[in-house]
Image (tube, rainbow over all chains, first blue to last red; front, top):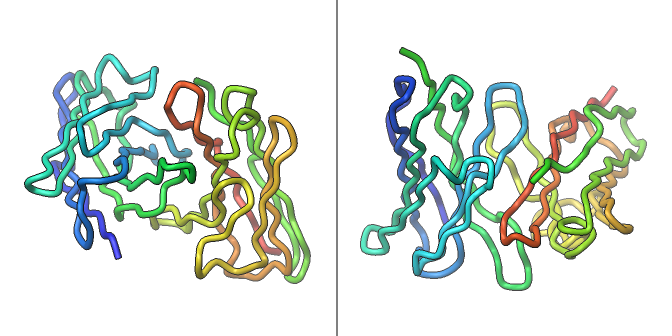
Length: 119
Length: 110
Protein backbone atom coordinates (compact mmCIF):
# COMPACT_ATOMS: atom_id res chain seq x y z
CA UNK A 1 0.00 0.00 0.00
CA UNK A 2 1.52 3.28 -1.13
CA UNK A 3 1.64 6.04 1.47
CA UNK A 4 2.46 9.71 0.95
CA UNK A 5 3.51 12.25 3.58
CA UNK A 6 3.88 15.98 3.08
CA UNK A 7 6.42 17.95 5.07
CA UNK A 8 7.59 21.54 5.26
CA UNK A 9 7.04 24.87 7.02
CA UNK A 10 3.50 25.65 8.09
CA UNK A 11 4.08 29.41 7.94
CA UNK A 12 5.59 31.37 5.06
CA UNK A 13 5.99 35.13 4.78
CA UNK A 14 4.47 37.05 1.85
CA UNK A 15 6.77 37.35 -1.20
CA UNK A 16 8.86 34.38 -0.03
CA UNK A 17 9.02 30.87 -1.49
CA UNK A 18 6.87 28.02 -0.20
CA UNK A 19 8.74 24.71 -0.17
CA UNK A 20 7.20 21.31 0.51
CA UNK A 21 8.40 17.73 0.16
CA UNK A 22 6.36 14.57 -0.31
CA UNK A 23 7.89 11.30 0.85
CA UNK A 24 6.58 8.13 -0.78
CA UNK A 25 6.63 4.84 1.10
CA UNK A 26 5.33 1.37 0.33
CA UNK A 27 6.31 1.66 -3.31
CA UNK A 28 8.87 3.11 -5.65
CA UNK A 29 8.58 6.63 -6.99
CA UNK A 30 10.29 5.35 -10.12
CA UNK A 31 7.03 4.86 -11.98
CA UNK A 32 3.78 6.77 -12.44
CA UNK A 33 3.29 10.54 -12.12
CA UNK A 34 3.18 12.50 -8.87
CA UNK A 35 1.02 15.57 -8.27
CA UNK A 36 0.62 18.54 -5.97
CA UNK A 37 -2.93 19.70 -5.28
CA UNK A 38 -4.08 22.44 -2.93
CA UNK A 39 -7.28 23.48 -1.17
CA UNK A 40 -7.74 26.96 0.32
CA UNK A 41 -9.74 26.96 3.56
CA UNK A 42 -13.41 26.35 2.82
CA UNK A 43 -12.81 26.13 -0.93
CA UNK A 44 -12.33 23.52 -3.63
CA UNK A 45 -9.40 21.54 -4.95
CA UNK A 46 -6.89 23.08 -7.35
CA UNK A 47 -4.33 21.03 -9.27
CA UNK A 48 -0.90 22.67 -9.11
CA UNK A 49 1.24 20.41 -11.26
CA UNK A 50 2.88 17.04 -11.60
CA UNK A 51 6.14 15.28 -12.36
CA UNK A 52 7.08 11.90 -13.73
CA UNK A 53 9.80 9.74 -12.21
CA UNK A 54 12.02 10.82 -15.10
CA UNK A 55 11.50 14.50 -14.32
CA UNK A 56 8.96 15.48 -16.98
CA UNK A 57 6.65 18.18 -15.60
CA UNK A 58 3.24 19.70 -16.29
CA UNK A 59 1.90 22.77 -14.53
CA UNK A 60 -1.41 24.54 -14.05
CA UNK A 61 -1.24 27.49 -16.48
CA UNK A 62 -2.49 29.87 -13.78
CA UNK A 63 0.47 29.02 -11.51
CA UNK A 64 3.12 28.03 -14.04
CA UNK A 65 5.23 31.17 -13.69
CA UNK A 66 5.69 30.58 -9.94
CA UNK A 67 5.86 26.77 -9.64
CA UNK A 68 8.74 24.32 -9.76
CA UNK A 69 8.27 20.61 -9.07
CA UNK A 70 11.27 18.30 -8.79
CA UNK A 71 11.90 14.64 -7.99
CA UNK A 72 14.61 12.83 -6.05
CA UNK A 73 14.33 9.14 -6.86
CA UNK A 74 17.19 8.23 -4.49
CA UNK A 75 15.11 9.48 -1.57
CA UNK A 76 11.71 8.45 -2.99
CA UNK A 77 10.61 12.08 -2.69
CA UNK A 78 9.25 14.85 -4.86
CA UNK A 79 9.06 18.52 -4.01
CA UNK A 80 7.12 21.71 -4.65
CA UNK A 81 8.41 25.26 -4.73
CA UNK A 82 5.96 28.16 -5.12
CA UNK A 83 7.54 31.57 -5.32
CA UNK A 84 6.30 35.07 -4.52
CA UNK A 85 3.51 33.80 -2.28
CA UNK A 86 0.59 35.92 -1.08
CA UNK A 87 -2.26 35.31 1.33
CA UNK A 88 -4.16 33.73 -1.57
CA UNK A 89 -1.68 30.84 -1.47
CA UNK A 90 -2.80 29.88 2.04
CA UNK A 91 -4.15 26.37 1.67
CA UNK A 92 -3.90 22.73 2.61
CA UNK A 93 -1.38 21.25 0.20
CA UNK A 94 -1.76 17.60 -0.80
CA UNK A 95 0.61 15.36 -2.67
CA UNK A 96 -0.94 12.54 -4.67
CA UNK A 97 -0.01 9.62 -6.86
CA UNK A 98 -1.42 9.58 -10.36
CA UNK A 99 -2.34 6.82 -12.69
CA UNK A 100 -1.62 8.01 -16.22
CA UNK A 101 -1.51 4.83 -18.20
CA UNK A 102 -4.84 4.66 -19.97
CA UNK A 103 -6.58 4.83 -16.58
CA UNK A 104 -6.02 8.40 -15.46
CA UNK A 105 -6.86 9.34 -11.88
CA UNK A 106 -5.40 10.08 -8.43
CA UNK A 107 -5.38 6.88 -6.43
CA UNK A 108 -3.35 7.73 -3.32
CA UNK A 109 -3.23 11.01 -1.41
CA UNK A 110 -1.20 12.35 1.48
CA UNK A 111 -3.00 13.61 4.56
CA UNK A 112 -2.33 17.21 3.56
CA UNK A 113 -0.40 19.99 5.26
CA UNK A 114 -1.70 23.49 6.00
CA UNK A 115 0.52 26.30 4.82
CA UNK A 116 -0.36 29.79 5.99
CA UNK A 117 1.07 32.85 4.27
CA UNK A 118 1.35 35.64 6.78
CA UNK A 119 3.88 38.11 8.10
CA UNK B 1 -8.13 26.29 -17.76
CA UNK B 2 -11.48 26.81 -16.07
CA UNK B 3 -12.79 24.69 -13.23
CA UNK B 4 -15.45 22.14 -14.08
CA UNK B 5 -18.96 23.21 -13.07
CA UNK B 6 -20.71 21.38 -10.25
CA UNK B 7 -23.79 22.34 -8.23
CA UNK B 8 -22.79 23.88 -4.91
CA UNK B 9 -25.07 21.60 -2.94
CA UNK B 10 -27.45 18.67 -3.21
CA UNK B 11 -29.50 16.91 -0.57
CA UNK B 12 -31.52 13.75 -0.14
CA UNK B 13 -33.13 11.59 2.49
CA UNK B 14 -31.76 8.23 3.61
CA UNK B 15 -32.56 5.55 1.06
CA UNK B 16 -33.09 8.00 -1.78
CA UNK B 17 -30.85 8.54 -4.82
CA UNK B 18 -29.08 11.72 -5.80
CA UNK B 19 -27.09 12.77 -8.85
CA UNK B 20 -24.27 15.31 -9.02
CA UNK B 21 -23.39 16.78 -12.39
CA UNK B 22 -19.99 17.93 -13.62
CA UNK B 23 -19.85 20.03 -16.77
CA UNK B 24 -16.70 20.77 -18.72
CA UNK B 25 -15.70 21.20 -22.34
CA UNK B 26 -14.62 19.11 -25.28
CA UNK B 27 -11.02 19.68 -24.12
CA UNK B 28 -11.56 17.83 -20.87
CA UNK B 29 -14.73 15.97 -19.86
CA UNK B 30 -16.04 15.58 -23.39
CA UNK B 31 -12.73 14.66 -24.91
CA UNK B 32 -11.59 11.83 -22.66
CA UNK B 33 -13.04 9.01 -20.58
CA UNK B 34 -10.82 10.13 -17.73
CA UNK B 35 -13.37 11.63 -15.36
CA UNK B 36 -12.92 10.68 -11.71
CA UNK B 37 -14.89 11.48 -8.57
CA UNK B 38 -13.58 12.05 -5.04
CA UNK B 39 -15.33 12.08 -1.67
CA UNK B 40 -13.98 14.36 1.04
CA UNK B 41 -15.09 14.37 4.64
CA UNK B 42 -14.21 17.41 6.79
CA UNK B 43 -10.54 17.55 7.67
CA UNK B 44 -9.72 14.50 5.58
CA UNK B 45 -7.95 13.90 2.30
CA UNK B 46 -10.07 13.19 -0.78
CA UNK B 47 -10.89 9.55 -1.49
CA UNK B 48 -11.26 8.09 -4.98
CA UNK B 49 -14.82 6.85 -5.58
CA UNK B 50 -15.09 6.55 -9.38
CA UNK B 51 -12.46 6.55 -12.13
CA UNK B 52 -12.54 6.36 -15.93
CA UNK B 53 -16.09 7.81 -15.84
CA UNK B 54 -17.80 4.73 -14.43
CA UNK B 55 -15.34 2.31 -12.79
CA UNK B 56 -15.33 1.67 -9.06
CA UNK B 57 -12.11 1.00 -7.14
CA UNK B 58 -12.01 -2.07 -4.97
CA UNK B 59 -13.75 -1.40 -1.68
CA UNK B 60 -16.10 1.33 -2.89
CA UNK B 61 -19.78 0.54 -2.47
CA UNK B 62 -21.75 -0.32 -5.59
CA UNK B 63 -24.22 2.36 -4.49
CA UNK B 64 -21.84 4.76 -6.23
CA UNK B 65 -21.98 4.91 -10.03
CA UNK B 66 -20.76 7.25 -12.74
CA UNK B 67 -21.72 8.14 -16.29
CA UNK B 68 -21.03 10.70 -18.98
CA UNK B 69 -22.90 12.31 -21.85
CA UNK B 70 -21.11 14.80 -24.04
CA UNK B 71 -19.35 17.39 -21.89
CA UNK B 72 -21.22 16.46 -18.70
CA UNK B 73 -20.36 13.68 -16.29
CA UNK B 74 -22.54 12.53 -13.42
CA UNK B 75 -22.13 10.78 -10.11
CA UNK B 76 -25.14 8.93 -8.74
CA UNK B 77 -25.41 7.70 -5.18
CA UNK B 78 -28.28 5.32 -4.53
CA UNK B 79 -29.64 4.19 -1.18
CA UNK B 80 -28.29 7.29 0.55
CA UNK B 81 -26.73 6.71 3.94
CA UNK B 82 -25.73 9.18 6.64
CA UNK B 83 -22.06 8.36 6.03
CA UNK B 84 -22.36 9.61 2.44
CA UNK B 85 -22.66 13.19 3.71
CA UNK B 86 -19.48 14.85 2.43
CA UNK B 87 -18.08 17.06 -0.29
CA UNK B 88 -17.72 15.53 -3.75
CA UNK B 89 -15.33 16.66 -6.46
CA UNK B 90 -15.08 15.65 -10.08
CA UNK B 91 -11.81 15.77 -11.98
CA UNK B 92 -10.84 15.38 -15.60
CA UNK B 93 -7.65 14.96 -17.55
CA UNK B 94 -7.30 17.65 -20.23
CA UNK B 95 -5.95 18.04 -23.72
CA UNK B 96 -3.06 20.10 -22.30
CA UNK B 97 -1.76 17.11 -20.26
CA UNK B 98 -3.07 18.80 -17.12
CA UNK B 99 -5.87 18.12 -14.66
CA UNK B 100 -8.89 20.20 -13.71
CA UNK B 101 -11.24 19.81 -10.76
CA UNK B 102 -14.84 20.82 -10.27
CA UNK B 103 -15.74 23.41 -7.66
CA UNK B 104 -17.15 20.73 -5.37
CA UNK B 105 -20.65 19.74 -4.25
CA UNK B 106 -21.75 19.51 -0.64
CA UNK B 107 -24.05 16.53 -0.11
CA UNK B 108 -26.42 16.76 2.82
CA UNK B 109 -28.28 13.67 3.99
CA UNK B 110 -31.48 14.96 5.54
